[in-house]
Image (cartoon, rainbow, N blue to C red; front, side):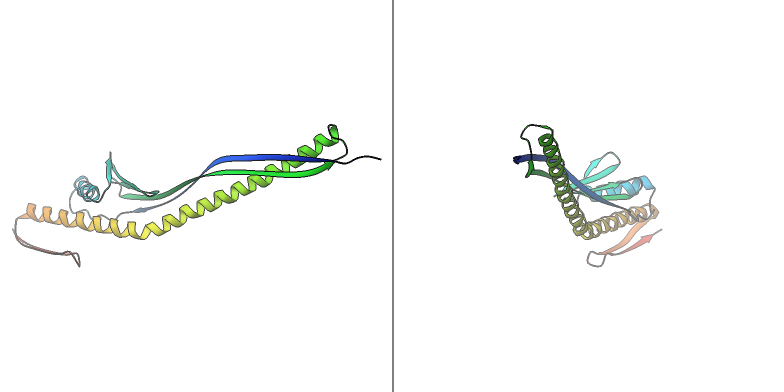
Length: 189
């Protein structure tokens, strides 16, 4: 008569998980002035809105959302990042007909592999959830970012028009309606 031994195996998984998502688009900046001057006007407008100048880019990071505008090409990249920790523990039991022999080692190894597979699956599920959260935050921010960048481009374009008009002649009348964004410049050449 053989006896059955209960074998218990416990495994833990600790991991830092990261998720990110990004969207890129192009700003439409009219070439009223040479590209370098237009880029500088846009940079001034964006730095006034909380962006930080880093070489040929302006960047702003706020609540896990990062906005980078390349002043040379007009490319805008909006990205969201998230980070979390996974700390999982699982335990399984099995039966073997010896407590320290080959059957016991085989059962322990099978239990260990099963636990590791289930822990990895749970970590992947949590990573996917974190990825979804990052994507959702990005989608929620895109509308506000687009509106803000459009306003900055409009203000930079208005500044460029004023500068161009002053280069062409003497400005006799300048009417600007902030609510509608209309700008009327009368120039005497």
